[in-house]
Amino acid sequence: MKQRRVYLDNSATTVVDPEVVMEMQSYFFDVYGNASSFHYFGRQAKMALNDARRKIADMLNAESEEIFFNGCGTESDNIAIFGILNAYDKKGHIITTKIEHPAVLYTCKYLEKNGYEVTYLGVNKDGVVLVEDFKKAVKDNTLLVTIMHANNEVGSIQPIENIALELKRINEERKDKIYFHTDAVQTAGKIRLNVKKLGIDLLSMSAHKFNGPKGVGALYVKKGVNISPITFGGHHENGLRPGTENIPYIVGFAKALEISHNRIEEYDKRIFSLREKLKKCILDIIPEVVINGSGNKAVSNILNVSFNYIEGESLLLMLDMKGIAVSTGSACASGSAEPSHVLSAMSVDPISAQGAIRFSFDCHNTEEDVDYVLEVLPEIVSSLRSMSPVWSQKTFESKNKN
Ligand code: PLP
Image: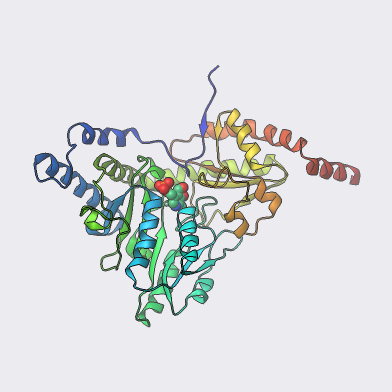
């Protein structure tokens, strides 16, 4: 019999929407010119590029000239951070959080080794940064704030608007402006992003997180922001990201974002109800589980659950054997034996942190997917626990007490 497959790792990446592939196709075979060329083929490609840029800008309440295409979310983050710092003729202080994706976290660690001072803000038990902590962290030499919009492991949404408001006040009294970047890779296509309302200067996105193709990202850079390129070459993307633009993927990016935007509320409602059903049933059926992160201040598609007294990696492997794809921590961190830096920052008990699993949904998941997980999960958890000496000791003690 064919193995049933349930994909619940949509925060790692998503399936590409067939409509997106259809839209991309002619840009491989018909409109394949270089957008910098002056002939017909080039002009056609340039039109597609401009069109995609304008569509994305409109959805973000930005201007076309403020959107810069590149290779992925990681590249967007790197261009934003290094680009802002390189534009200053001095080193200084950066504020970020302990729960950033490695694309930001390791960039900051690198900068720290190279003469910059970095403050890593902590988070509360729901995985949310406190505005008060941010205010206290600002220094005379602060140059950049980079705080993610939603966390990729637990889904917690950060108070970006409130931090931006504080920063605006702080900037009014300073000569050197502190710029504000947010990594919105986990919210683009899931939450309507309005860059003006958010109050940020730079914002990173990646198409493969919202049913677009892998290998294409975009960075919003507010007009007037002083930013330098970090790679050098031609005049593409106004010189900020040299290299021939990948028109089919850029067209795919715009189409995927458009599809998500057109159905954002409908998708959100459906995904939220699937997640809540899974959460409620897990809590009802399986003892010793902990939900990591707050449902109210989090994106709808992520459910991070700790199954105490088992290893998340073992659970992941056994679910995989049953055809269910989930993740422990982020895809980029899996394979490391260290407990998740996000759960550690949230002060999650080490026993719980070890047994954490992320289920992440998208619009293609169904009630049947959730039912199938609920059919196989309890048995896997109890069989793994039966092999755990700590669990055996615990059940032995509680039986004897009764
Ligand atoms: N930032 C966040 C919050 C992410 O979740 C990811 C990917 O998981 C990235 C950045 C990196 O994006 P990409 O895979 O497109 O480089």
